[in-house]
Length: 124
Image (cartoon, rainbow, N blue to C red; front, side, top):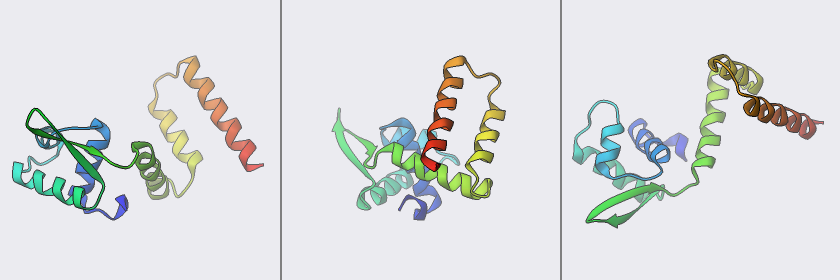
């Protein structure tokens, strides 16, 4: 469902996933293009109506948070990224990501080796 959201709603949802929770003001500050406060509140209301976010009251302010687990959203976003920019190739995406890293520490190298080994075992 996240993929089908309009651009601004998806932006708000992704901001809340990144922040884990936030007020309308915090969301507005993180958005591009300086939307009005009422526009942000409208976007938050739409996302709440779709069941993607929830809110609680804290010190007389609404604090919003995503309902789906951010890990599940991240997985979907990563799949879209790989399909869109790397022709569906996880290896090409991983190679590009490694090119962004100036230097991997030994723990990160070990984590990547384990992930590659696990993926090979699942595919065998």
